Every structure is written in structure tokens, then in C-alpha cells.
Amino acid sequence: MNETIRTILKRRSVRAYKPDQVDEGSLELILEAGRYAPSAMNQQPWHFTVIQNRLLLEKLEAACKIVFMESDVEALRNIARRDDFSVFYHAPTLVIVTGDSAALAPQYDCTLAMQNMMLAAASLDIGSCWMHAVMMFYATEKGKDLFREMGIVFPERHEPYAAAVFGYSTVPLPEPQPRKPDSVTIMGQGAVDSHSS
Ligand SMILES: Cc1cc2nc3c(=O)[nH]c(=O)nc-3n(C[C@H](O)[C@H](O)[C@H](O)COP(=O)(O)O)c2cc1C
Image 1 (cartoon, rainbow, N blue to C red):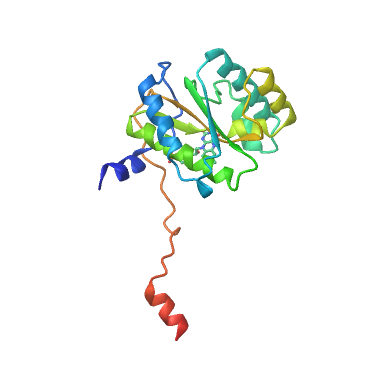
Image 2 (image 1 turned 135 degrees about the vertical axis):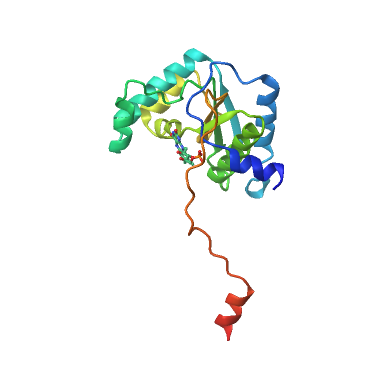
């Protein structure tokens, strides 16, 4: 097994963060890894917004909590009601990848950029966790207005397609959840031969 495979297998979603900020050099490497993701027709339609301001993160978190509370999904409402609920798990950094909505495939491009960043972070012993609440929040009119009011402004025509928090885990990484065993079909040469005869 090589170092890349080891990093892919060891990455876990981290849900408890130390208050220490991600060091600047590591953040630059993580963002660089994001910018080297593949993109449809090499459009690179992304923009990376990095939020490290504690007050801003708290405001955004409070707003996201409301979206969870108002969600149609009962599980989300139940999670949001918990006293210890923290959308961002007290992580010091939130990265939002927005993409030009007029690009060919911005959702895939931005998601691939985020996956590169999460893996780069894992390789540097920095934890991360995808934050779906950000996209859910932005999808509402109230959410869009609140982003603007908070001074979080994206480039023209851009929408958030991926968001994740980054920081140092307070606990050792957990063992992975078991992966489904029946999720691969390999159609080798034999399979094609038997159908064509
Ligand atoms: C599209 C997507 C949305 C997710 N949303 C959240 C989220 O809002 N909060 C959270 O704690 N984890 C979220 N996750 C993380 C998943 O729960 C996690 O990846 C999964 O349980 C597998 O665990 P692992 O990442 O440790 O391998 C999300 C993951 C994806 C891909």
C-alpha cells in the first residue's frame, strides 16, 4: 500500500475540533490541492471562500441551526434540538467552494476540489467534515439574504456546491464505518464474450 492509498483509507469525518487555527502553510497546501482537481473542460469554475472569523462562524452556525430546525427531515430536527448541537463542531475554519452556475458541471468540479482538500488535510493530520447545512441554508431565500448581510459575497453567478470544516481533532480518528460489500460490479472481458456469442 502506498502513502496516497493509506491517506484515502485513514481519512474520517471529524466532529470534535481543538480551537487551534489550521496553520497557514498547511491551509495553502490544502487549497492548492483543491485547485488541482479535475474539472469539466478544464473550466476550473470554482472559488474558495475561507472563513476563519470566529464571530462570523458563530453567526452562520446559528442560522444553519434554524434551517435544520425547520427541515422536513425529522432526524435533522432532532439533531438540531440537542443542547450540545454545533453545526460546525467548533472547527476553526470553514471552506465553501462555490462554482459558476453557468459552467458545464460545477457541482462535480467543486465536489472533486473539496475531496482533494479533505484528502490533503488528512495527509497533514488535519481533520475535516463535509458541511451539507451550508448548501441547504444557501438554497433558501432567507439564507441568501443572511449570507449577504454577513458580508459573505461570492463571485457573480456563483453558488455553493461544497463546504467543509477543517481543524485539528480533539480525539484519535475513529475506525471507519463498514463499507457496503456489494457496491462493485466488474465486467471483465469474459462477461462481454459470453453475451456476444
Ligand atoms: C454529501 C454529504 C453530506 C454530508 N453532510 C454532513 C453534515 O452535514 N454533517 C456531518 O457531520 N457529516 C456530514 N457528512 C459526512 C458523512 O456523514 C460521512 O462522510 C459518512 O458518515 C462516512 O464517514 P467517514 O467520512 O468518516 O468515512 C456528509 C457527507 C457527504 C458526502
